Length: 418
Image (cartoon, rainbow, N blue to C red):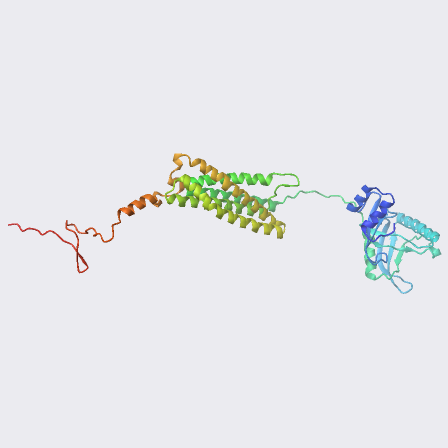
């Protein structure tokens, strides 16, 4: 087939000769079918300046099995130009003689020199020409062959000889033994990371329970719900829209970080609730005001975290992408559990009398400020009008008197006994 300037042009040329669309698609994808091979012709392989493409029919007229030896050297006649010397097996010698005889006759009939392509792995290495004007080639070439001319250099001759020797090697391989090797290092690292994650989660659950008392128990339940939702999101698959999440070591690192993010949301809210309880508010009122005050801080922090993770996901390579993805999903789920689950659970528990105790919030009775009304009445009882005499500080019944700006006290004289 006539070489074309591009792969698409070569396939289109084959299509115009009646090839099916299935054949064209298979050639475009695999490069060969049972009947055709799409061959790349690099610059210089046939005197061309740029890469060309051509489709050749299979099977080839001759394979490397017919070649016994190929070596580079110099011709002994003429200008001692570089050449490739080929020796054939008995069967290969007969094949090559018949091929060259047919090419000589075709060239003689058409008045144009014919060539045969030397191809290895669908790449043309050379395209030697049979000179139809040389009468000595009328019966073909036998007893070995020499490829020379075309301004061939010694390096090119050695490369071509290597291609011919490589093509002569047997390509059928037999397995000596088979062994399955698992990714032991990766599996161990993954297991260790999961163990570390569960251990960290356990420590967080214990700390929240000890420090925040009953609020810590609510936070622990929220963390468990958070973990179930996040793990389910990782494993769910919705076709091409969401194929699920495959955890890697960076992804596990992001998962561990989201545990802290989920706890941080509860801590901010719980500290607000404790502040409101210390001010003397009831638990129900403290829960409502604590959420309203703490939600803005949670929202700002989580939005900034998500934006940072998005930057990492967009501009980084595959490994940090896993970290960023798990971090984004974890932050979203933590906001859901902190706002919906924790608040709903606290709202339900606030209706029970046993829950309306500051100790359940981790607040001591000595830390609670008196209500504002009682503080006002106490302050009012201690005030006096301006200019009114101050109460006496002594133990007598007399009132205070002033003398030269100095405060004096009176006392009762003791009577002498007679």
